Image (cartoon, rainbow, N blue to C red; front, side, top):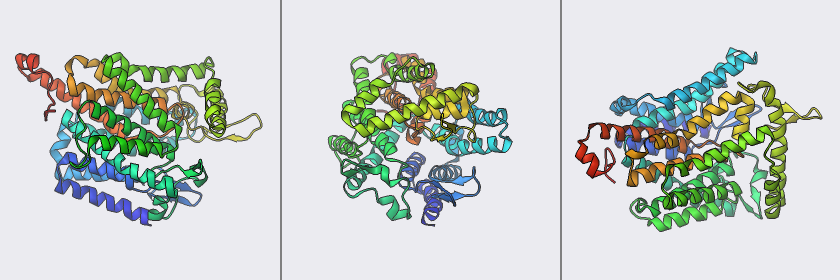
Length: 461
């Protein structure tokens, strides 16, 4: 009951934000605070925990509560924001995903109800987030404000990480009355993997790794002002690094190291092709694993030198991966659907659904579903490449940072399935920024464009 009250109350609080604050600040607070502090939804044999459930598809979880609050707040107190929205190819790409989900149910004879249910489940989470992000984020200064707010949320979570690292994950249970996962997965090396109010320690480690690398990049570029006007930028970066270390999760460490490596390469070799390195390698890995030409033994051997239990986990994932890939062969285009996605091993036992996002999409919704999601996530990189000559200085640095992080998200999909709503805000917001830059170059006098560089439309960095 506490969780349901919190969700309903958050919708009211979000609307109040829009009544009292600027639209952008209200938008930022609604999502950053809501996504980091609201309860995690769990399905149990008796129903749903952590959400207000009307049906299987129609549920108000933390994502939907933020969407409802931000949408109602914008309509009631900032309707002019909605007129700034422009439909473009990102929206078209995303809207094809629920269509693909619906077709999957039809071609597998699962029925229209299943297709509609799964399509609505996707739409209620992602469609409002993409729509509102594009409408609210309309300048480089807007994007920078959103990035700083996300770093601020991660800074608070660094304290949560240290606390739960020492005392065990207990905050979610203390506030909402239940733990959001299997507690046995959170003990490691005589300490605990923190989770806060997120779905899993892996999701928290990704948050800390991505935000630590982002903060370090903004600091390097001179764009990270003291947090809340009080906390110096070096201390923010240090706190995020400590929080990341306390997650005790190797995927988060890999996210940080890979993101920093790409960012540093881009710093010294500021060429657009740098941003495509990680996404292309990730896509190549998917193709290679499906075709059977890439051997994963080296990853298992490397992990065994660090931690034998991690090596066993990776080996199980790859064995399960091969079973699912063989099952996907017979339904390659549109997948097997949610009801038929579970496969059996040679002994006839059900194989647990794998953790990798790319394999889940390929098995459940086929090559069409996987390709559409990859296209959505790579869209800000492609957008920046297409408008490379229109960007300079801080503008290019911020959009490149978004490109690096979404590339790392795609790489994380090779092993995990925690699409970041924070990064989706940045994906959609990038389109609003680039639209503003295009408008500036289309209307500004030629001399101003030539000698004044690319300003931050709506605000100067």
